[in-house]
Length: 178
Image (cartoon, rainbow, N blue to C red; front, side):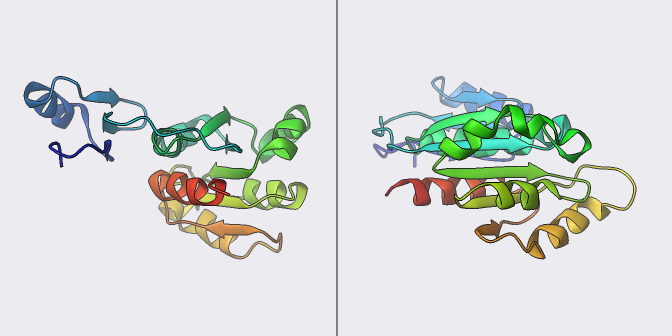
C-alpha cells in the first residue's frame, strides 16, 4: 500500500503500533485522540459542502475525531462541535446555524443516544448516527444508544455500528460528493 500514490488511513491504532510504523515510514502522522495513522500522498480537492460532526459528550470525542480524520482525508470541509448533548439540549440552539448550513451531519453519542433524534428532527439534512460504547448505567457498551438510534422516528437518519467513526466519515464523504 505504501508504494501506491494514494493516501492511506489506519484506524484503531495505539501509540505502540504507531511508533513501530514511524520507524519504517517517517512521514506517518498519528492522531492520538482518534487513534489513526495517516500517510498523506495525494491532495484531494475539497468537496463543496460541509460536514458537521457533533458529539453529545466529551467521552464521545475519540470516535468523532476518527470520523473527522476520515472525512478530511477524503477532501471534505469538516466542522466540529463537541459536548452539546441532551443533558444541556439548550446548547443546540447556539449552533443551529451550523446545523442548518451543513450538507451532512454526523452525530456521535453514547449513553442512550437521543441526540441523533433531536438533531434529525431539527435538520433537513442527512444525519449519520454513531453510537459509542462509552457511558455508565445501562448503556450496555453501546447497545442502548444503537437501539435508540435505530428506532428514531426522525426521518433522514442512518446508523453505523458502535464506535464506527471511520464508517460515518466515509459515508458522509459519499453524501457530500454531490
